[in-house]
Length: 308
Image 1 (tube, rainbow, N blue to C red):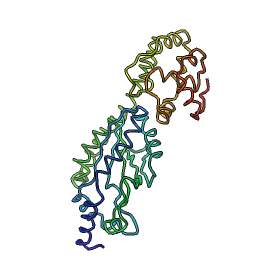
Image 2 (image 1 turned 30 degrees about the vertical axis):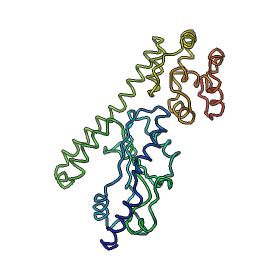
Image 3 (image 1 turned 90 degrees about the vertical axis):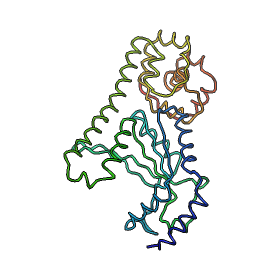
Image 4 (image 1 turned 180 degrees about the vertical axis):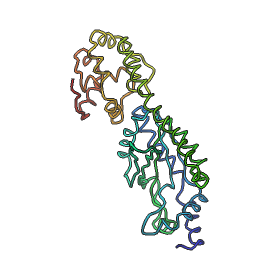
């Protein structure tokens, strides 16, 4: 084990020479990409205080070693998503931005219920921060950061649970019935995650039946759109061709999000129709209205067409 004086000296060196709010640089990279594709989310970030690092390494002195496992959450990011179906989309975006070190992604179990961990550890880009090898070795800290991904409903539960149970497990070990009841609250919130998506889908279908195309598009795709009404000509085309509108309603949301993520295209209802038309509909009247830049970007966007 490294001597306390040497450990403290190296840790002081780390904080005085290397640390410069790396969490904000990493958070900005992530937020820029999520904002580009229009996902609804909130983000939080922190770099551990020096005293917190000392305490954690002291607690895990039997786990951390020079040649083995090291602390990987010096920098922490939390992404809180409005909708459960954005989790895998968000993970895909992160994996394209950073090099994955390891991850924990709990899959649902039909026989038991427990909190779901979605924690990814990525390498910190060297242009943001590189922990010197000697400091990594002596301080037992990896040049990595952790991302926790949650939904807006589960976020509140996890915050409460962390402070009242996780920090005081010895107080809860003797009351498994209350611990199960606490988990039951999360089960209800998980149902809420599914229900909110179902409500939006139902509303989108209702607006499809009413030929309210703006509302249909907004509730179907659930993105941050610019406040711009659908072009009157596009609205007329969809009203005259309900089958086209139904194909838009059925278009896979993740594919549209990926298109926005990979291209610089303003997010509004008009461009949603133009993009889906270029990818799948191929309606001549809509094509004649489509800006050339969208036509070109969609040509280079490799998507599998959805069957009619």
